[in-house]
Each structure stands twice: as structure tokens, then as C-alpha cells.
Length: 110
Ligand code: AMP
Image (cartoon, rainbow, N blue to C red):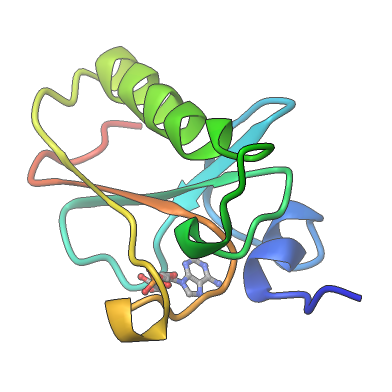
């Protein structure tokens, strides 16, 4: 059985998170320890542990997260931002559930 991470529990609404966007495929929420005025995490509803574990069957997921982040930023008027995937423990990945960081110097207007 797959190991359930904190992001599984956020996805399944077992623990709270500051959710900013959700649809059938993706959930986005505020990073609990923000490193920029806007620091969001985008996760697919379908579990993949890491970019290192992406296969031809799941290769669409990283691009889908980028598209969702791009659309979210455009809708919120966030003009410039960084998108980051940490890959593996040695790459700085702490939570083994695929997630895309969106960081911007611009604040998120509610
Ligand atoms: P990474 O280093 O790429 O695995 O990033 C994991 C991120 O998840 C870190 O920036 C953490 O601050 C963030 N994080 C950990 N637990 C939570 C949580 N319960 N809610 C929101 N963000 C979290």
C-alpha cells in the first residue's frame, strides 16, 4: 500500500489547509511556511510521489499542474512568479507527493 503523506490527508480533507483552488484534477493551497508573499502548492488528485517517479502514463501531470498554476496566476493578476519542482530528498523534496511550488513577490489578493 502507498505511504500516505500529509498531502494525501490535505487532498482527502482529513486535515485542513488554506485551499485557494480546486477542481476534479488538482488542489492548490498555501504553503504553511511561505518563502515569498505568495507561496502556493499545486498537487494532482492522482498520486505520484515525485517527478522521479513519473512514467509515460503519468507524464501529463507535471504539465497539467503548470497549466493550472499559469491560469490561476493570470486570473489573480500575478504577473511574475517562479515555478519549482523539488525532486527527491537530495533535491530538497520533503513531502513525497508530487507538488509544484508557485512563488511570487506579489501578494495574493483575496
Ligand atoms: P518540498 O520541500 O518541495 O517537499 O516542499 C514541501 C512544502 O510543503 C514545504 O514548503 C512546506 O512548508 C510545505 N508544507 C508542509 N506541510 C504543510 C501543510 N500541512 N500545509 C501546507 N504546506 C505544508
